Length: 118
Picture 1 (cartoon, rainbow, N blue to C red):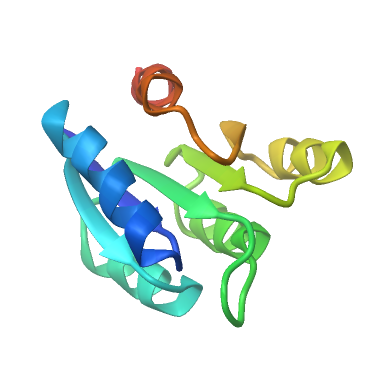
Picture 2 (cartoon, rainbow, N blue to C red):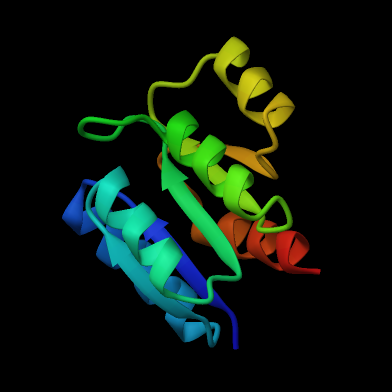
C-alpha cells in the first residue's frame, strides 16, 4: 500500500480523486493548501505527492520545489485546469514526474501513479 499526499483546494475534486486511489489500495492524505500539504509531507512517510498547480498562497511549483529539496526521490505529479505547455515543460524540468490536465481521468491518473511508484 502506497501513501499518497493529495494537495487540492477543491474539496469535491479531492474527495473524488482520493476515493479512486483508495479503491486501488492506496492510503490518501488530503491537504487543502500548500502549507498544510508540506506539513503533512514532513510528518508522514509519503510515497508520492499529487498536487494542483493553482493553490491558495503557494503554487504547485513551489510545492514541487520544496518536496524535491527535502527528498528528490519522491515522485510529484502535478495537475491543473489552467496549464500551458510552458508550465508543463517547466514543471517537468523542475522534477515533476508528470503533468495532468483537469478534469483528470481516474484511470489515467491511476496508471500515472502506478508508473511513478515503480
